[in-house]
Amino acid sequence: MPAISVIIPLYNTEAYIKDCLDSLVAQTFTDFEAIIIDDGSTDGGARIAASYASSDTRFRLIGQPNKGPSEARNTGLKIMRGEYVTFIDSDDCVTPNYLETLFFIAQLHQADIACCKSQNIDENYVADGNTPNIAVSKLLTAEEAARIALYQDRVPDYSAWNKLYKSSLWKNKFFPAGTIYEDFAVIPEILLAANKVAITKSKLYLYRKRAGSELATQIDRKKIVLLLDIAENVFEAMKPKSKALYKAARSMLVSASFSILMRTQDTEEFAECRQRALKQIRKYRFGTFFDMSIRMRNRMAILISYLPRFLFLKLLKKGLS
Image (tube, rainbow, N blue to C red; front, side):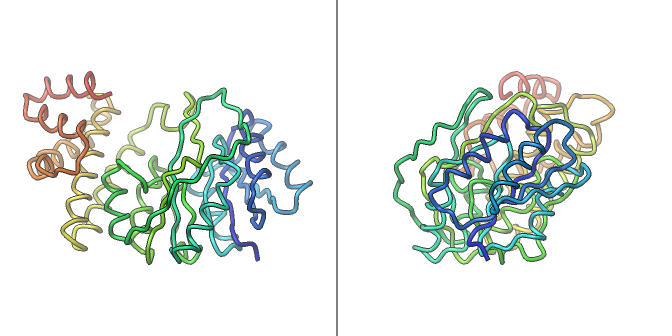
């Protein structure tokens, strides 16, 4: 049984998958399996991945009809064999010491989750194989980690990637299908289920920002409604756990509501969802404004939300986009 399972959803990233898989081949920690889930790719990405699977027994390529990144990850979760698991998107890379560092600090602190910072890279980035120096790690309680993730401003965040998890945390846990921000629905709960969370501020995960990514394209009404559903569900799940988590989840719900207003047009298609988002903002903005942990952009958005609706929406898109 490998120590770590690496789950990589693959969909039409022919230009980047080689960099991703090369960064795994270069790992200083070698006791891993890489599970590549080809989610119905129509380009040459699966062919590139197949060459790695045929030459290195640690790599497996699994094909399935296109179901989206959530279902691709879920397929990997069902067949993983490692004591730990991590997720890497197929257009991203990791530094050579990514697995070794996260495994080391998880073992050092006997933590169920280890987490690092990420570094944004552009479409033209090519992995250079450099190994960054390791910043000192520290330990958080599960509640502290979940609280930080809900505020969305520090490590750990609510991304599925940049973390190493005890595989047992994912027993009977899966990503929701058919939505954006699928990590948002499950990661706070996973963090809260951990015994403790070890973090390093070293930037070991290289996140590629590209124009054609799912979040950079126009989102449809179904997905935006699911986002609001997820935000409300996370809020309701966290609300009874503690006052600190209630405040953090409230901030998250207000932030998600602002995001919905910014990412949709004021048209009939989105009218119901936008009205729900406005209702949540109006309900929780006062208490959220006086929460000293919220981000400044959210505080500014709350201030302008007291303006007449047409002016508020105009300034929101112009000033915070």
